[in-house]
Image (cartoon, rainbow, N blue to C red; front, side, top):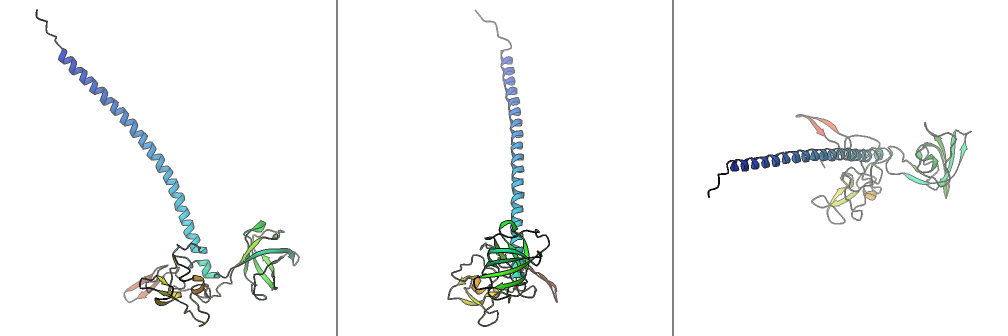
Length: 279
């Protein structure tokens, strides 16, 4: 007995496959769209966070660079170490100590402070700036108008500057610093024995500091003390001697922060800051 033909079976299979492919395609489109949206949201969030962090880091870097340029740094990895504007004005002869007692003087217009021994001779520190670094008068700066030196202590009469608190005295044990006298130095590389700028260090052919062997070089001409090994050459004994607060400013090896335009036969030659081609 012959079975009747099953008309439309092939068409039904084809339609089923087409429907399945349509479902798969729609599912893929929906999933990929959602994934793309999620990825974009994640990327946007990451960029916002990174942008905020980047801005903060950039601000910190600029703050650090500005502080090194203005007040110098103890960071031995800094290439502008010893070339700050504050060091160029006051040198490195800062004195520091502790307050032993204080009282008002001259009908309250001055403050008389007795401190630990920080001076060497009578009146030596008169005229300098006296800044408290701790206590209720922290960061208050006053002018020294009189200085008495004793074997174990010093006495200062301080004139408050504009903005100083009124009717406030420092407490016993408060710390302070006294700036160096402005522009009283000889310049970098001073040699006291020869009374001239001929303090020397020794370097090899690649400019690295040496202890004994090497080419003698004036310390004043060594501008980059980055990564200096103090057992090889101590900046305080060969470079800072005499003080970096010389009494002039010109774009030379003593004032490397300064730049200049030098007229030449071929036009203007630019001498950039912190670089001296001749050295």
